[in-house]
Each structure stands twice: as structure tokens, then as C-alpha cells.
Image 1 (cartoon, protein in one colour):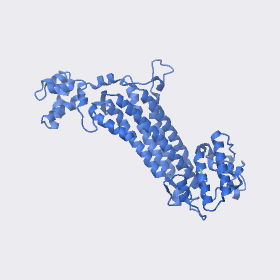
Image 2 (cartoon, protein in one colour):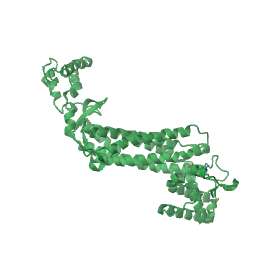
Image 3 (tube, helix red, strand yellow):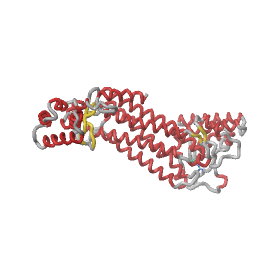
Image 4 (cartoon, helix red, strand yellow):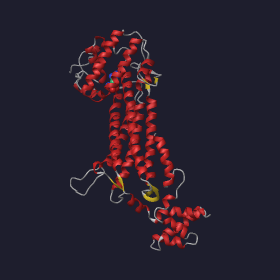
Length: 454
Ligand code: ARG
């Protein structure tokens, strides 16, 4: 039996088994919340003094001890004890060693409302940090889009060449998806901004606590309405995991395209050496590992979300130890997304777009087939009929007949004006409607995107 249980040992005769300790302790992963834990304790202790549960000398003694614990932890000189089950017990144990009044610090509080408070504070800053990194990636996409000037490439559906689009249009498509991620993170941040502190273990307190005071000291927008809900609610973890998983899916889709584009078959991009890897065996290889990891890591992010939802689904009110499983997936999801965003940003910022190759591939005359049909529509032909006329010319050309250009030129309803649409770079300029793929339409879009990312 290990020596421990200092904080709750009253009703126990012996110490906990090693197996329990190994399974139960969350210190190895929750110690990274020490700042939030200490901030929560400062707010709690000030409130206790304000309502008369501590005198000012006791308050100051505990606050000094909390300051000292914080610097010990920041410097790395803090000595954890075998009895420190989690960050909350570690901080309280040390405060009590440093200050006799420490024994009053936990008055009116439980680790149940404490941990919920700490994790909300931690998540609130993580959301801001991740969101800033997403905006950074959006800026990189914007810069690349601005630099892309008149470049164009084939747009794809079904991964088949469809209609040519400006490269800037394509890059910004990813930028808009990221804009929704920023919104989603902010929205999750707004909903989590509720203080659970003062809910106690589950039912509030017989002591004259002031939960609104701690909420405002900690900068929370509001205070819990129901103590049972306050200690058992982990919606904010699930929502953040979802926002990160969907962001991860967007990064994965960017990654997948860069992998395709970097292949010799596409040849649309040249990755910078600093952001690609080589092969230990094949000297000619240059591999898009960052893009592959962006794709690969998304699986893990989805796993954290679904795993945590499964943890939550069977839980009765209120706090259950299962909830301790909230932290590892959340921490890992934030760490994973942070690394992925930074690496992908560096990769995209240093990527060279091979715009001549893109233009070559986009200049297949067949890519202008829809423009030809729309040209006929402009001259009064019903669209279905126009679609059939052009479809037939395409079929004839593909079957080895005259080229599409010749067929168009000699067709009674078409002729040289229509054939001019097949010249390289013409078709891409035609789709000038709102949000469309022509360079002219993209100029408006660039302005909207700049405003959106601020
Ligand atoms: N380490 C615990 C957690 O992460 C803290 C709360 C423990 N509460 C309790 N009643 N045992 O959830």
C-alpha cells in the first residue's frame, strides 16, 4: 500500500493500492492546467474572504503561497509527492505546507467544480490560440491567391477535369472553409464561457458563497444556473473536439490536394525542400510528408471526438470519474491541430505553383464545352438542345474525327466566334458571375475575403 490519500483519507484505514493509483491518477496529464488551477484558487480564496469565511491575513497568506507554487511550477522546481493524485491535490498540498491557512482553501469547493472550472479556462485560451493559427493559414492562402494573378488551372468534379478556374479561386475555396472553422471555434468559446465554480461537489453549499464573484474575477461571461449540470457538463469539450475534428478534416482535404498536385502526374506544385522529405532508398524522391500527416492526423481527431462522445453517453448525473477522460483527447487534439496548422502553413507559404503546367492542362479544348453550350444559349438556343449539339461535337472529336476547334468553326450554329472560346485562357475569363471562377469575379472575392479575415 502506497502512502497517500492526504486530502480524503479521513474515512480510510489504509492507503490505495498501486493499481488504483496507476489507473486513477490524472497528474501526468492534468499538470499542464496548473495555471488555470491556481487562477481558480485565487478567485475562490478572494471570494471566501469577501464573504467572511477567511480573514484578510489568511487570504493573503494563501495567495502568497499560491504565487509561490505557481513560480515553482513554472521554473520546474516544484516537487510532486506520491500522494499528488492530480493537479488540484498537488497545489493544495503544497499551499498547505507553505501556509497554515491553506487548510481553509478548499472551503465550499469540490474538485468537481474546480476541475470543470480549470478545464473551461484552459479550453478558452486554447480556442483563441488555435483560431489565431487558422487565421494565419488563411493569410497565407490569401497571399498566395494575390500572387497568383492571372494563373488558372482545371477545376475538377469527380476528379475529372471540369471547367478552368483561377488559381486564386481554388486557393480561396479552402480559405472560406477555414473561415467557418474560425466561426465555429468562436461559437464554442462563447458557449463554454460559463463559470461552474460554486457548484460544489454537486449541490451547492450551506456556506454563503458568491459564485457570481468568482465568475467575474475569472473573466467568465456568466455563472452556472444548475449545480448538477455545472459539474457534469462536458459539452464544451465535445464541441471543441468537433470544431477541431472538422478543422482537421479541412486540413486533410488541403493536404490531399497538395499530395496530388505534387505528384509528377499533376505537377502543379513544387514543394520547398524545407517542407518535404526524401527517401532513404530512392534518391529521386521528394515526399509531401506534411500534407500526408495533415491527412493522417484527421483520423485521430475524429477518433477523439467519437471516443469522448461514447464516454459521455451513458453517464448519469452528476460527476463520475469517467469525466476524467475529457482531458487527454482534448489536449491531444489541440496539440495535434497546432502542429498541423504550423507545418501546413509553412508548406503552403513556401510552395511554388507551376502555373504554366496548370495552364497547359487547363487548356484542353474540351474544358470549354460548357462555354460553347452557353454561347449557343446566348443566341437563343434552349440549353438542353445546346448541350446535345456540343456533346455530339465532342463525341465526334474524341472518336478521332476532326478536332473540336474545326468542328466548331464549321458548324452552322457556331463558327469562328465560338471557336475563339477554345483558345487557351479564354474560357476561364467567361464565368464572371458572383463568386465565380474568372479572374474578374475573383477580384471581388479577394476583397470580401480580406474583410472577412480582418
Ligand atoms: N482528477 C479529477 C478529474 O480530472 C478531478 C476531479 C475528481 N473528483 C473526485 N470527486 N474524485 O476529473
